[in-house]
Amino acid sequence: MSLYANDDTLGIIWLDGREMSTHGDAQPHNTTHHGGMTLRAASMDHQGRFAHRRQVDALVCDCCQTAAVMTQDNPLVVYRDRTETELRDIASSSWQQGAWTTPKPVGADGWQINGCPVNGPALVARQNDVAAVWFSGAGGESQIFLSRSSDGGATFEDKLKVNIRKTLGRVTAVMYPDRSILVAWLRQDDSETAKIVARYIGSDNNLSPIFELVSVSPERLSGFPKLALLGTQAVLAWTDQSRAKPQVSTLMVDVDAIK
Image 1 (cartoon, rainbow, N blue to C red):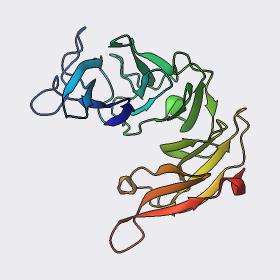
Image 2 (cartoon, helix red, strand yellow):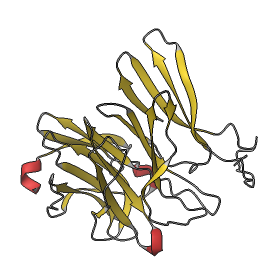
Image 3 (spheres, rainbow, N blue to C red):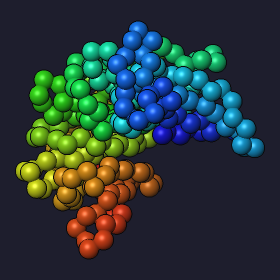
């Protein structure tokens, strides 16, 4: 589920399984996509009243997280789409004139996979400057991509590859006032070890070196790291599995040290 704030309302976007079977398994898809996961949205005012209940997309990836922001003009959502032939690339839609726009690709990777990779995108924005970050396993390669938009997500630029070594994905990002971006993700070192690494990307898409932040478990229990801005610095939060009991740990990231 993703949230965004729009004036005095709260926007809510979620994966909705009402079209799926009672056993929770997707049924064969026909031309109306009956039986698949859908993406739906609604808004809630300060008195808890819901409005604008809409279906955004009739067939999407079952488990990948969504990401939403409020641009200068409109709400924007990015998510992992799904086709009848099991292409699962990142798509976007925005709220325009009382309806969600027809979904369109952010980056056409051509990743065909029969099961959900549980690896959703990140989305950051300042007014109408937007950047989407996502993981793709297309062509048997594990890659992190970034694509910018200067018109609130109406169009996206050619994607930029961010990682170098093998990645597990699980991306997160923040955008600074000058429109530079810090991206973090899980890099797999071997079958038993992984690291959360980060890369600073200038407003001109100049790539700084990749910087290691912390060692983590590569297992699903490590969850998805999150970045948040605190003044001019960034705070990284992640699920720490190195202790007797898992806990959320945090780390201040000095972006000047990794530029």
